[in-house]
Image (cartoon, rainbow, N blue to C red; front, top):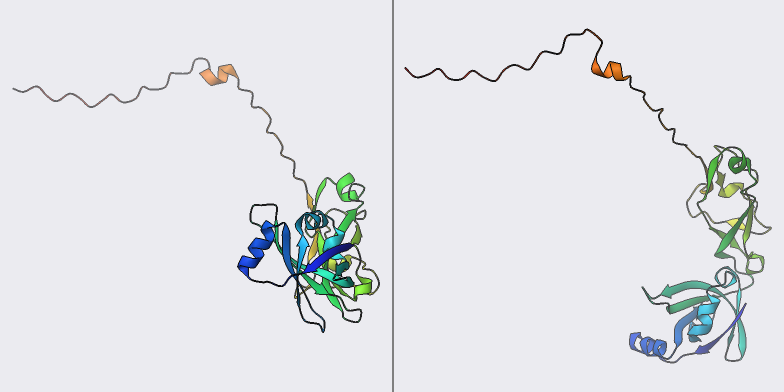
Length: 224
């Protein structure tokens, strides 16, 4: 995926604010042996680009000063309530340097799995992206996960997924996190209506009426 960037000379909060007013987004490119470069990008073009999945998890071709650079999106700062990208960071890509990136996960086969089709279970996607480690040339566009074999009481973990050649899961201290959970759906059972016998409600025939409550305290004796 390609995009165009321009070098910017000024930096600082005030300069970045003025840049945003003109419809540009400030950014930076860092990494590798070269010095970091301050850049700016047309906001409208950037806004449409960030809506595409490929912009977030694949190697990008950035045109800067007539030259093409291989970069990877590293950080995206959004305005708290406006539809505006405040700042963007890119990392240079070097062919011989192993990288850690987040790749989207595409699930399929869920509706045909025994867990959903016959066992009345709820399938929850706990992770929608996976952090992997690989060389730039091996970065996949997405990780395909088939859920057709899910069964009741069996969840899917990261280590259960077969990754493309040259790609390893970067667990970052986690042993084997859950990717997809399977939970049985508990149906609420309505209680059967209680039929009350009218005669039983009034009491058995011939039964003595219940004793009346004790009378109130006796009146005080009359004064002599």
